[in-house]
Image (cartoon, rainbow, N blue to C red; front, side, top):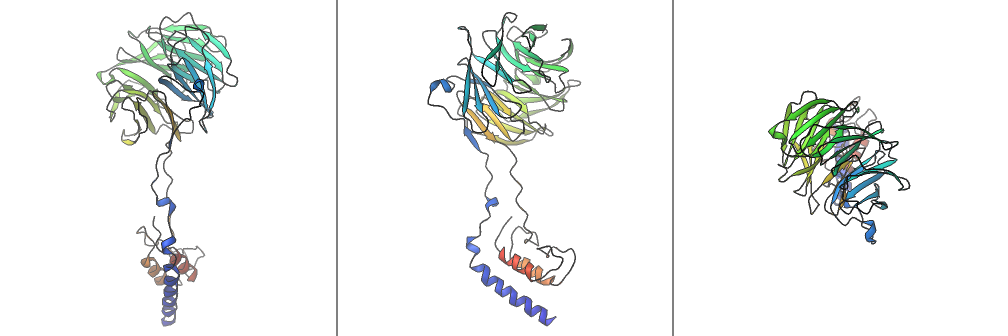
Length: 400
């Protein structure tokens, strides 16, 4: 026993001498704060390659490779989602073309559509920028919102004339008109399975429709809706989120229209809401220039993204849920919102106080020679021995 203790003391002193010369150089990189990365999509020196007016709509392509933006400058621009470089500008050919209020990608990412104030919906080929269809003639109001059906066969549009219209993507023909709102429609979305359309209008209602025949399913009329600016459906199809002019986000049960909760935090109108692809997070953007992230399960605020200088009109999650794109007056920003990585666990921190120190060396000494599963067996060879002592000594000063 005396020999074992003497050996341990000698090794302990030797370890201290070794580590005292290197302690000042040991830095734990992962102990530094994890900050959200944000960047402005670069503006090309050529004015034609950047928006000159407010950006009303931004969206990721389903394959995650491209970002589309629509603006009051009457054009849609495509950007590389990886580096923010401008790919091309999709110009509206008609001289009377107006501001683009809504853009959407087809589910296969091959088509991008834009809805504008000239009562038109236009479809372009993403790969070459060629105009496919211009759907004009059956819409009597400005087109404020468009969305593709999950199967990509249909486009739904909502406009200032209070109506929802469905269009055939292949040939551009009008399928049907859905009426019921009494004031203009701000946004429409399909349920994940494509069976239901949800619309939000200035008549302070959220309405649900059967997509196959346009028949009315449910109307949610509640003061907590306010004047809705944006609406979204959770990926599991169970919850509706609605952002309004009154600076709140209300959540509703899609099956019976019951109120779940209201999220408070924005100080001005909420222009855009969306769910993360896994449904765990709600993101919102508003006139207060911020983007806010919320836990969809309990409604708790997670974090606020600040960087825009003007109102945030539109936000969208990337398909993998790791980033968000946002559009404001003339700026598009791309944010990393992935949870910070878990810090590596220090096996040398045997007593679990968050720092490798002399107490951990003492624990190695107390367990010296022990076999089997043991926290002091740092190198995992089945025995607490001199190697464990060296490993702990070499990590002195490290923190979790």
